Length: 141
Image 1: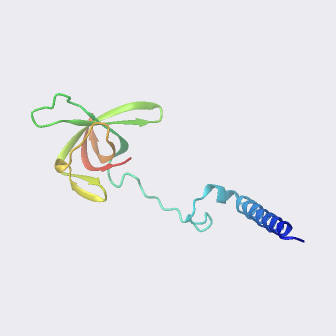
Image 2 (image 1 turned 180 degrees about the horizontal axis):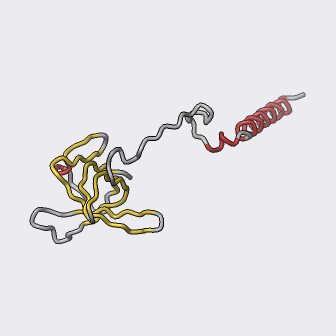
Image 3 (image 1 turned 90 degrees about the vertical axis):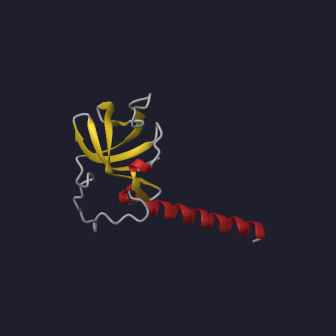
Protein backbone atom coordinates (compact mmCIF):
# COMPACT_ATOMS: atom_id res chain seq x y z
CA UNK A 1 0.00 0.00 0.00
CA UNK A 2 1.40 3.40 -0.90
CA UNK A 3 1.12 6.67 1.03
CA UNK A 4 -1.95 7.88 -0.88
CA UNK A 5 -3.91 4.73 -0.11
CA UNK A 6 -2.92 4.90 3.55
CA UNK A 7 -3.93 8.58 3.73
CA UNK A 8 -7.36 7.85 2.19
CA UNK A 9 -7.86 4.91 4.57
CA UNK A 10 -7.10 7.13 7.60
CA UNK A 11 -9.52 9.80 6.33
CA UNK A 12 -12.27 7.18 5.88
CA UNK A 13 -11.73 5.85 9.41
CA UNK A 14 -11.95 9.38 10.82
CA UNK A 15 -15.04 10.13 8.73
CA UNK A 16 -16.85 7.00 9.91
CA UNK A 17 -15.82 7.67 13.51
CA UNK A 18 -17.48 11.10 13.32
CA UNK A 19 -20.62 9.55 11.81
CA UNK A 20 -20.83 6.99 14.62
CA UNK A 21 -20.30 9.67 17.28
CA UNK A 22 -22.97 11.89 15.71
CA UNK A 23 -25.50 9.06 15.52
CA UNK A 24 -24.80 8.06 19.11
CA UNK A 25 -25.27 11.61 20.40
CA UNK A 26 -28.54 12.14 18.53
CA UNK A 27 -30.10 8.76 19.31
CA UNK A 28 -31.21 10.13 22.69
CA UNK A 29 -34.16 12.53 22.23
CA UNK A 30 -33.24 14.52 25.36
CA UNK A 31 -29.85 15.38 23.88
CA UNK A 32 -31.62 17.15 21.01
CA UNK A 33 -33.54 19.31 23.44
CA UNK A 34 -30.90 20.02 26.04
CA UNK A 35 -28.09 22.53 25.86
CA UNK A 36 -24.53 21.94 27.01
CA UNK A 37 -24.41 22.21 30.78
CA UNK A 38 -28.08 21.31 31.26
CA UNK A 39 -28.83 18.97 34.12
CA UNK A 40 -30.23 15.56 33.20
CA UNK A 41 -34.02 15.54 33.26
CA UNK A 42 -33.94 12.54 35.59
CA UNK A 43 -31.95 14.42 38.24
CA UNK A 44 -33.76 17.71 37.76
CA UNK A 45 -35.59 19.07 40.79
CA UNK A 46 -38.67 21.16 40.03
CA UNK A 47 -38.66 24.39 42.00
CA UNK A 48 -41.54 26.82 41.66
CA UNK A 49 -39.99 30.26 41.41
CA UNK A 50 -42.33 33.01 40.37
CA UNK A 51 -40.85 35.19 37.62
CA UNK A 52 -42.53 38.22 39.15
CA UNK A 53 -40.38 38.08 42.31
CA UNK A 54 -43.11 39.73 44.35
CA UNK A 55 -44.09 42.28 41.70
CA UNK A 56 -47.55 42.31 40.18
CA UNK A 57 -46.21 43.28 36.76
CA UNK A 58 -43.15 42.00 34.89
CA UNK A 59 -43.00 42.64 31.15
CA UNK A 60 -40.41 43.21 28.44
CA UNK A 61 -40.95 45.73 25.68
CA UNK A 62 -39.79 49.07 24.32
CA UNK A 63 -39.85 52.58 25.72
CA UNK A 64 -42.00 55.14 23.96
CA UNK A 65 -42.30 58.83 24.77
CA UNK A 66 -45.73 59.55 26.23
CA UNK A 67 -45.28 63.32 26.03
CA UNK A 68 -43.28 64.17 22.91
CA UNK A 69 -43.30 67.88 23.76
CA UNK A 70 -41.64 67.16 27.14
CA UNK A 71 -43.71 68.19 30.07
CA UNK A 72 -42.48 70.73 32.60
CA UNK A 73 -40.84 67.97 34.69
CA UNK A 74 -39.07 66.21 31.79
CA UNK A 75 -40.04 63.54 29.29
CA UNK A 76 -42.53 60.90 30.31
CA UNK A 77 -42.21 57.32 29.09
CA UNK A 78 -44.49 54.35 28.56
CA UNK A 79 -43.73 50.69 27.99
CA UNK A 80 -45.02 49.23 24.74
CA UNK A 81 -45.25 45.43 25.05
CA UNK A 82 -47.14 42.43 23.71
CA UNK A 83 -48.97 39.42 25.11
CA UNK A 84 -50.30 36.48 23.11
CA UNK A 85 -53.55 37.59 21.53
CA UNK A 86 -53.07 41.22 22.61
CA UNK A 87 -50.44 43.05 20.58
CA UNK A 88 -49.32 46.63 21.27
CA UNK A 89 -50.24 47.00 24.93
CA UNK A 90 -49.09 50.18 26.65
CA UNK A 91 -48.61 51.17 30.26
CA UNK A 92 -47.42 54.57 31.52
CA UNK A 93 -44.30 54.37 33.67
CA UNK A 94 -44.19 56.21 36.98
CA UNK A 95 -40.72 56.53 38.48
CA UNK A 96 -40.32 57.11 42.20
CA UNK A 97 -37.30 57.92 44.33
CA UNK A 98 -36.95 54.17 44.95
CA UNK A 99 -37.08 53.14 41.27
CA UNK A 100 -33.86 51.35 40.31
CA UNK A 101 -32.49 50.91 36.79
CA UNK A 102 -29.97 48.25 35.78
CA UNK A 103 -27.49 48.70 32.99
CA UNK A 104 -24.26 46.74 32.57
CA UNK A 105 -24.75 44.82 35.85
CA UNK A 106 -25.02 48.07 37.80
CA UNK A 107 -28.14 49.32 39.59
CA UNK A 108 -28.63 53.05 39.98
CA UNK A 109 -31.50 55.43 40.63
CA UNK A 110 -33.67 55.73 37.52
CA UNK A 111 -33.72 59.52 37.86
CA UNK A 112 -29.98 59.45 37.00
CA UNK A 113 -30.49 57.42 33.80
CA UNK A 114 -31.04 58.87 30.33
CA UNK A 115 -33.70 56.91 28.49
CA UNK A 116 -34.11 56.81 24.73
CA UNK A 117 -37.22 56.07 22.73
CA UNK A 118 -37.02 52.50 21.50
CA UNK A 119 -34.80 51.18 24.30
CA UNK A 120 -35.57 47.52 25.01
CA UNK A 121 -36.33 47.06 28.71
CA UNK A 122 -37.79 44.65 31.23
CA UNK A 123 -39.89 46.47 33.80
CA UNK A 124 -40.97 45.17 37.21
CA UNK A 125 -43.41 46.94 39.44
CA UNK A 126 -47.03 47.26 40.48
CA UNK A 127 -49.74 48.40 38.10
CA UNK A 128 -52.69 50.56 39.03
CA UNK A 129 -55.03 51.26 36.13
CA UNK A 130 -52.94 52.47 33.18
CA UNK A 131 -49.98 53.47 35.40
CA UNK A 132 -47.08 51.30 36.50
CA UNK A 133 -45.02 52.29 39.52
CA UNK A 134 -41.57 51.13 38.49
CA UNK A 135 -39.58 49.16 41.07
CA UNK A 136 -36.88 47.90 38.68
CA UNK A 137 -36.07 48.55 35.05
CA UNK A 138 -33.40 46.57 33.23
CA UNK A 139 -32.09 47.32 29.75
CA UNK A 140 -32.23 44.33 27.38
CA UNK A 141 -31.17 43.84 23.77
